[in-house]
Image 1 (spheres, rainbow, N blue to C red):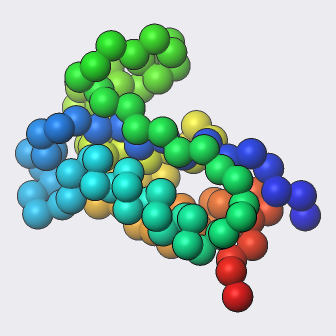
Image 2: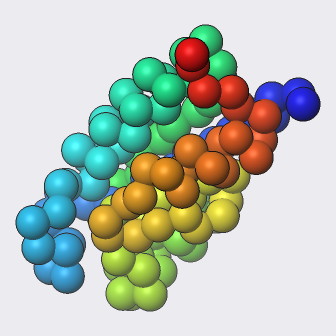
Length: 109
């Protein structure tokens, strides 16, 4: 199976989500996911971006999703893989891995 380009988006804010007590910050989740994916799938390209919902967002789709997070339609951190919502609040790494493997990623040894 050919590996497809994967875009991982992490939406969040500096302030921890009020509904996500004891959860890591959104930025911490972004850094954790980046490191975990690189370790599990070395030398397999992917793109991961952090979108601060309180900043000016120029991409219309990302701005729309950020507005939904601000309007409490989603908890943050909100994680999307190729525009599909995979988790919000407490992120499950296994779900992210499954989605990457559906796109042709092969775990290291």
